[in-house]
Length: 152
Image (cartoon, rainbow, N blue to C red; front, side, top):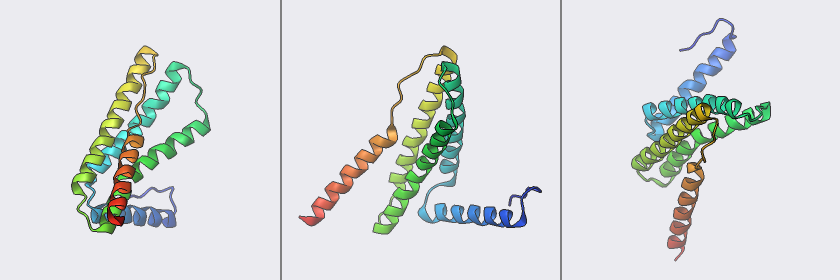
């Protein structure tokens, strides 16, 4: 799969096994690799444009803020995986929910990237909308309602 002469054989094996395992998990859960890969690519672009925006509008760029940004972006990748695992666990067909969820996350990243580019060009910051929080609140409300319905 991936070979880099500077990587040890053990590191290459670990990387390849992790990649194959992650791909198998996505396939098993029914998460489309194209949408997921494009989402991951958009997360990377958003991160880079966010750093450039911070520099353009004069915000300090610290290692802690960069670590938080990376953790924040990686946690977004986990959202569709958790939804798919939950759907598999209860035996539901979550393909449409996953598709809608990933599409919403993709649109959120596109909005963020465009906002970052706008801020880089104008040196003005656009308001950000936290779509993940909105989705999380909605999913939580649905789960609480479903739990209350089953207890009644």
